Length: 169
Image (cartoon, rainbow, N blue to C red):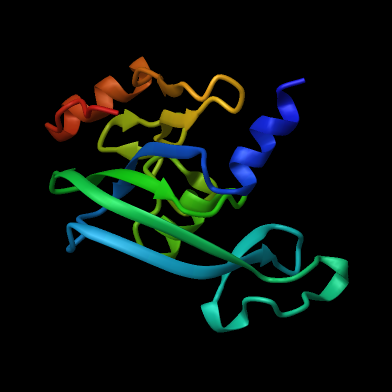
């Protein structure tokens, strides 16, 4: 079966993911690379820990603080939001959402991590994070695979409202 071989690609960081995200507010820098810890907090929800805590045992049998690293590239800015390409260098649950909230720029529509769910009179019903591209070398055929997912239509009214271009994946 191909599944174990595909899992090895993820473990060895040979599966390259690219996401698009719309972050609240105007991010000052054009690129960011953030390294923090990742683990569960007191109430079982995932949270960011300081990088100095990576490896520390968590209470309540929640495992250890694990390394979490993401690179962000600004694609465009409006006066209310920043359009980004997010490249996770580790694969932690809610990683991009956690890192953007930690930077003070939660994802638009991401109520769980503090993102705005309205832009003026426009309701944003879901967080604007999109798995846009996945590239890897097929483990059996050794052929390069490049999978691209089109931007969901739900993004269009928000991008129009903010006068932001539809990004390439």
